[in-house]
Image 1: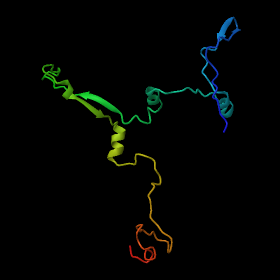
Image 2: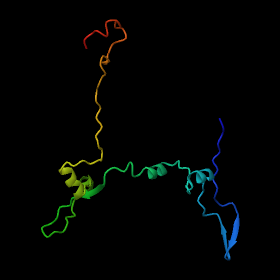
Image 3: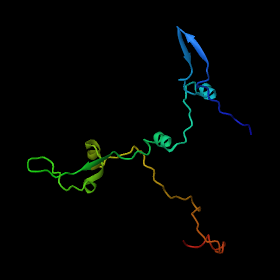
Length: 149
């Protein structure tokens, strides 16, 4: 088994060049892996992520869930202004799921939500004289094939 070392090129190493009376260095160059650059012929930004916030960012849209809102119901006076006396804010705030009008109509008319065509259904089948046979470890094996299940 050969050991592989991942090499990242980039970062501030003190190298500078001068171009058009401007001194440039590689402090703002994104680290890259030369092997991946040659294999995929594209720049791939590879960096190590080991913080939970990084993982949450990477998988944000996969684990996002439904659109949600926090709403509050406030009773109003007869003139339309809100009442502000003795309000229990914790009991009034609601954690709700937001459903857009388009999605609501789609669900009301029971249209398919996901494009699974054809739907996969597990079918039980057997070939002639090859039916499934169930037995316990202490059963007499000679009587198992002729037993009615």
